[in-house]
Length: 287
Image 1 (spheres, rainbow, N blue to C red):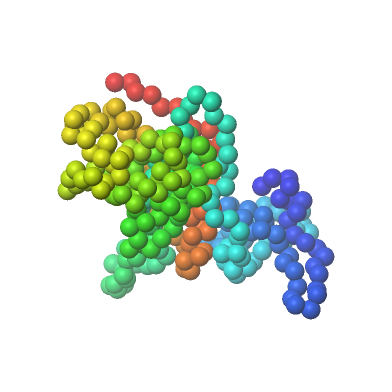
Image 2 (tube, rainbow, N blue to C red):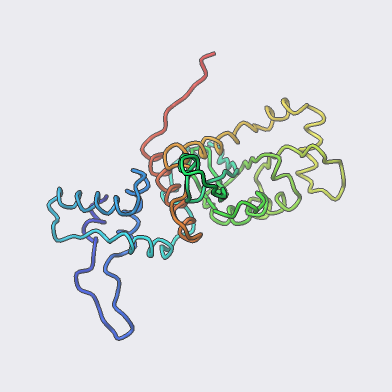
């Protein structure tokens, strides 16, 4: 927690204007509490106890932690729609590449151990988290949808949250539709779109020109050759981001309401971006 958050932790003087009292805790305090909860993978009550202990250890006895019911209610009211901590410096000659992909996050419910022990059945349900990740491993855009939403339907929403210049966009063949190509071209006119063609696609003048170019390239060079020439390997950064999210934040959403689940996922992405600011391991091929 930064010094600025501590100094503005709560409003001791609240204004009553006849329409209800003002909030006691600003959004920055609510965010900080949820960051701690997600990093340590704690339920809300345990997170409240941990934060109260931290404030006591710091000698700030006049400060109070928001109770767990307030943390739950205020979560969906946080005013942001994209992951935080996205801005970063990069060399001017470095290509800004974006990789798009999705993964499943399990909704809160009884786990497999509980079902087996008590001989009960629980319907499994998932949410889909869609990520747009740049080549520096910062999550530039993230959207949570229900499990029935197709990957290509959220590309436009992801593009609206991207604030960096993009010259290279990659995704898997699930995004190989004319609508996706048109959406990407509208948002990034000069970007190179690298999406492998679907297995059942055929040449047609009605297809988007860049889609036809990828199809012809795959036929001419073979799928492996085409991937090498078009730098399709950049798409692996989205796979890495999804694995980082599941290993660090977890593969389960603890909130029950969809709006809270969406904010919870965005906060998790913000945590990963903050970790990325601190440094990423440098990997290199040895064989």
